[in-house]
Length: 347
Length: 248
Image (tube, rainbow over all chains, first blue to last red; front, side, top):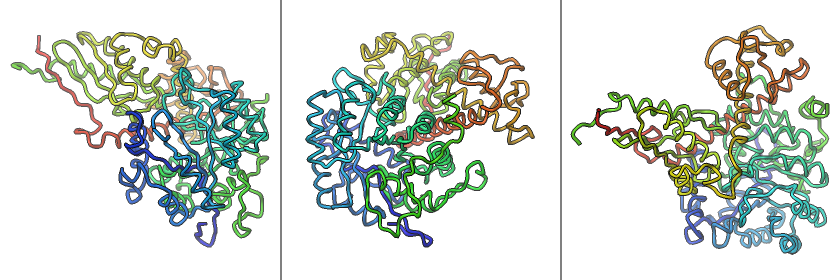
């Protein structure tokens, strides 16, 4: 919980990781390249006093995670969104068992989401059922651009992916987080193309599709489809840190999102440990559109409360203390957005 | 070496730089020379060798290949350049891309069955986005600085736009995607260059703005990450040029 100017904010960090990028865990040069690339993101976009040394960054462990999120970072609840990357790391990049154990030890504070890949066919479906039971899954994180054997990626509307989505419905896994953003070796399967989200969001209205990194670097394509579909959400991971380095630009992203997808569909996340939540939460609550940007309406306290935590709480059925709720519901999927856009598409 | 000819004397270095400046990062819509992607240029008696670099090891290989191949083509058009070599540094696919460039293997030949036949469609998508963003910049500047209003923008023609970098950029982007640049051509058009009805103009501009915000965001990311990645490199993000060619 974060309190500022007499207002109290329930904070859900909707995208965190517990990774091991140490040399001892690297399978090949790509493991090194990957963690180095992550470190550059961290170093380039963090305030100076929030920059970690490289060794800490490669592996920080569960206790450090708890401190950064819950003691220092104002976070009430956080959701693991792992990147497995078995081709680069011996025990994977995201540490599944360690994260699961941490989740069990801290009831009510952490949610563990896992992953599936439709290219594993029947075997993968069996695994998904097992994982759902063992990990108590409410959500999954998917990487459609990941390479596997000769395949250079997949689409959510592929026949096998549909079978997995149908299995998720059966298993009560209703939050489908999809990584559409900076990624590993996308070649012709455009890693940022969100057209597949559009198709499955229409067909599976009981599932929620959360597009991570708000579709950056194709924000406009994401916004356009999210406007058409009431079950498409945007995760702010990677977009958030601009609030420090380029606040004027952050204002534009937020302004566009509020216009196109609305205040009920935007989820805060730090992308921990690429960035830490403390400074992001503080700056976000303080944030206001720079003077002169009259093209966007001012951001209200209510909007900030929804984005920082109440929207994600609605998706994950989290118990929000009464004093931190809003008089109206967050996560209102029927709210009118982007006036005229739907009609334009329909005509 | 008895005669080292500085760049200024042969003029070749400036021609090489100018040729590289015509190569654009399709996603960012900016020349690779402005972005700091040209790490070094070496001119010797045999030819020209250019090293390129990108913000991360994992920048999409299709875009990486596209820029490197465009650079090679541009350099081959420079008279007297000699043997042209373009090398991409520090990319996870560097070996494959550099081998493909050296062999003139083309995109498919470089990446094999992983790749589509060509990158034309990808290039086209981003040329259309670049045009949309350029159109928005022109129109918004006009709305800010004149008393024109939204209601008559569907009739706005190129001839009515004031000259300057915004307009020049728009004309270039229009040429790229095959749209006319006559003074009486309409400014506000859809993705395929067709006129936009008066009632549809506000939404078209809203979308165009999202495109522009997106493209600019990518550029912020890429510039920042490149600067962080190469912050310990002597000379920082400037291009290191050596010219040892003997004057003929």
